[in-house]
Image 1: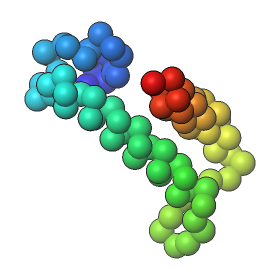
Image 2: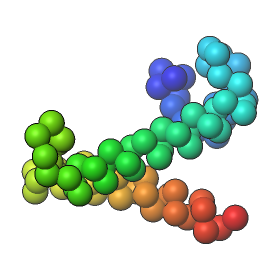
Image 3: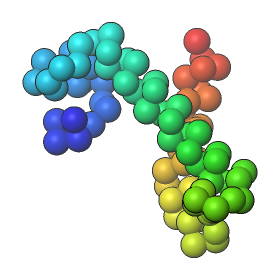
Image 4: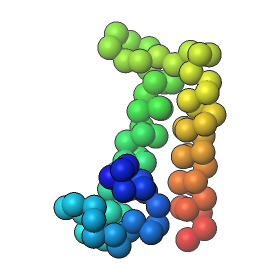
Length: 80
């Protein structure tokens, strides 16, 4: 999917993405976003063996990926 351009709107109806219909595409984006947000939440909330614990070294990931993702999901939710 990433080689076809990722999650941009133009790819929603792109039939070159194998096995993904327009309805499945929406579900895929929603489920992937929810999973990423959940994993970041677990990394910050849990402190147990086997769970990755974020530190100050992960600030770039949070600032460049996690915060924009969460901000966009919230904007999408509250503008509808």
